[in-house]
View (cartoon, rainbow, N blue to C red):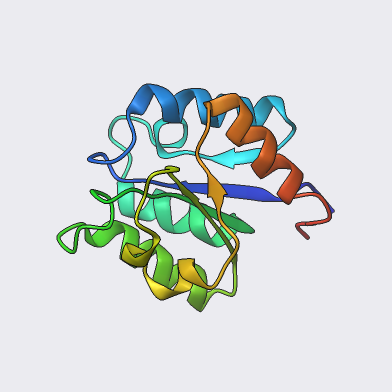
Length: 136
């Protein structure tokens, strides 16, 4: 048994990359094994293959959401959400405190969400939510 792995899903048009990098690093510092595309995919790697493996190997999907990331033209987030649901993975949405929650797709509205704070505070909250999750 090993600690669970968290797959970080986000949109490049969404939260800024520096916040995401600090968030991913903070998760690791909190003892959470993390799959973050910027850390896992090297130049020349086939991105879709790496992402599919990351999704299969992860126990929890963390989605960084905002109004831009939920734009219907952004198919990645909906593909990853469908994959998470189809594989029976745990889903955690992170939303800005001023977001209109009626814009969230139903799978995020029916789950408890985390309000986005600093990368470190948000990572601590996500880490606490992974306690008790075990990856075989």
